Structures are given as C-alpha cells and as structure tokens.
Image (cartoon, rainbow, N blue to C red; front, side, top):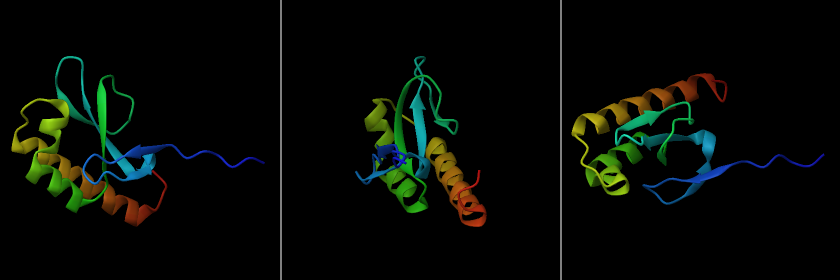
Length: 99
C-alpha cells in the first residue's frame, strides 16, 4: 500500500516546513479581521505558526502578523495567541495526537 502524503506548511516565524497538524492557522478574513482559526477552514488569507510558546512570543516581539497581513494588531491579539498556543501544546502533551 502506498504511504499517505503528509501535508506540510511553512511556519512564518521560523521559516521551517512543518506538518500541518503541528501548526495553528491565523486568518485575515475578507472583511479585514484577523483571528485564530482552530478549524483550519475559515475563508481568507491564512498564515501558520508552530505550537510553541517561544515562537508565539517571538511573533509578538517582532509583530510578525502586522507585516504578513499588512495591518496593525494590538497586543491583546498576541496575548490571546500565546495563551492559545500554550493551551494546545499542553493538551497535545497530555493527550498525544488525539484531539
């Protein structure tokens, strides 16, 4: 049997290609709103970031999503992102790959 292809996406902070399941998607909707997309299905332009608190803190420090989406985001968005990434990383460590 042929092995199944694993979809890969690029982490915009580190520049590494990572399996899609190990990333979180941030999306800018057609209305211009930037939000987290846990379902990976929201309409709009998406960017991916690793499930690592250090990477999320680097994104906050360098305002990566301001540059990627060409908009000004407040620090609350980055704080929410760090909290979400921390929660998902802890959940993955506790439960493994099962969602």
